[in-house]
Image (cartoon, rainbow, N blue to C red; front, side):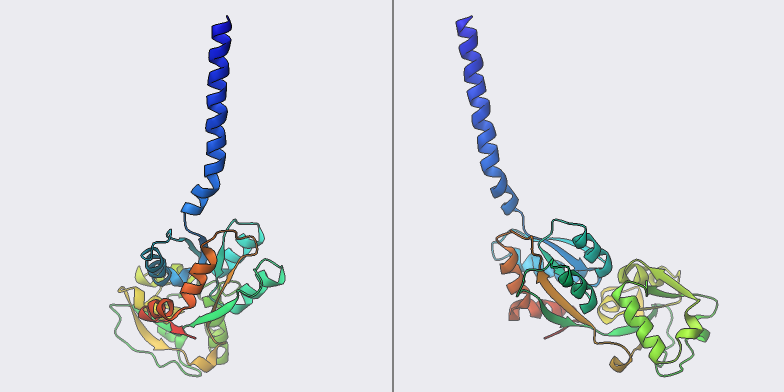
Length: 262
């Protein structure tokens, strides 16, 4: 009996030691993964390349979740355990900041973009984007693919541009609204929509489309991408990765994919 009790005590001691070691190692294990970045859908190729560049320096590779900036902002407001937010516009970053969810002093606007009208690669006709241009006629019986103008930055910019050019009323009931700009791009690539409004970098990333026309920069608010750390971030690499994105080396990565930098 005594021997059996001693064996049980020994096994209990071993188990408690293992649990203690596990508890000690858990924070280290979490830090062995890179910071979690919530990034606008239009940043897929560029941010992936930036994460690869940071990892090449010996750091844990950042984990990146791509979606519309509006969806990401709502995730943050709901308590998503992320470290960094990169938005495709300033208003959604404003929304998160107003709620006190950003780490003070970390918000920086560092990228710019253009707005273009895209068509399937097989369509060769160019369209001059100017006040009153015949967009509705160019659509034929189809619809215009855009990010949801009620929330998605690319769709908001699109509505601004089409309104200022005087053609919004002619197409507002002929939209194919998508959950993010890449989903809008895919509608054109697959031939579901004959035309779409996306960022210049999106058109560059997809060989299935061509730029049919470019919107004047004066037709919409400046397209600006801010980055910031979240107030709840505790990852030791988060600030380092943010600084890397803002460095000359990091910005060079984004320029390679067609973004403008500040």
